[in-house]
Image (cartoon, rainbow, N blue to C red):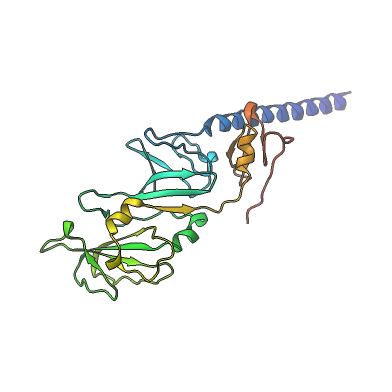
Length: 260
């Protein structure tokens, strides 16, 4: 009799344990659904949603690593670049560099966040190279002076680097440096800085396409919100605390991926 009671108590304990885990899990997933509501920084005409996310508030499950967006003065920022637009249907983000509005010179050490799903696209872009306060301003390519920040003791030069071209900065010859991707007109090649207006190129900004393959459109069409977890690269968070690796119209399930 005693053994039977102990066995029954053990079964009840296991059942209660599973029950409370399920409740906690549903609460977390329901919270993820609410947390992953598209957000706006304040003045932009687009919302931030998967694969992008705003990490403030701990909403890391709402986007993919490398797609972090910050809000500065009610504007969306991706790294040190202002976000001009985002097209979720065509999978591209349009960026423009923050710069001195009097002469359109970008801030030194302007860089893009490290993102493997955008990196290949960056390398296919031409870019403007800015050199600040160089002791030896001679370079093996055409440059133009940025006069608004240049004087007898401070000089700034700009050059145009075409895609896939290598550039090796002279160590210690310049105080600082910036590289900004730009968008050139299609069908025009072998241009130098003498053939373009760098101010216009900076003003127009540039587009980057991401190649992250998910079923986010299907998830959203089914009423869900896209995200991920520590076990799955993609999850569709659904109303009332359910989730699925595809969409909310599917039978509930989970995907667990073992990472090497």
